[in-house]
Image (cartoon, rainbow, N blue to C red; front, top):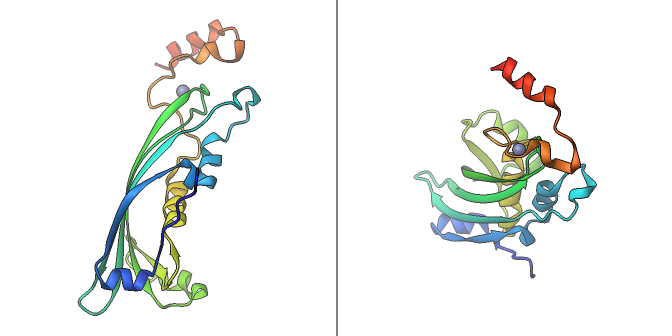
Length: 175
Ligand SMILES: [Zn+2]
C-alpha cells in the first residue's frame, strides 16, 4: 500500500480558512502500528493491529491576524490488552487547537508556558506534515498499558496456562 502524505503550507492554510478531512490507516502510520503491536509474547507475533483514523483539519485566522489550526480525530484502533493479551478495541476521540507562530523552534518550549493550556504552538511551515502530526497526537494519547475496561473475557485460556484456582479466590476476596 502506498503511504499517504499530506503536506500543507500551514500559515496560508489558516489564513484562507481551508479545511481538509480524510481517513488514514495503519500503513500511513508506521510508528503507531509498531506501538499497537508492541507485545512481549512471541507467540502473538502474528497479531496484526488494525486502525481507521478519520481526521478533520481546519484553518482559521483570528481578528488580530493570528493563525489557528483545529484538528479533530476519531480513531478506531485495535491493540492487545496488556492483562489478557487478547485483542481489544481502542477508541480515541480527540481534538486539538494550535496557534501558528513564527517563534523559533528552540523558543517554543519557553513560549508555551505563557499560552493557555489548551492551545499548542506550531511553528510556521510551508511543508507541514499533517500525517506526522496526526500520528504524533495519537501516540501521545495512547494509554501506556491498555487493558479491557471490564474483566478480561478469557484470562485463563491464554498460552495454554492452566487456570489458577486461587486466582478466582483472590478476586472474590477483593470484591
Ligand atoms: Zn483483557
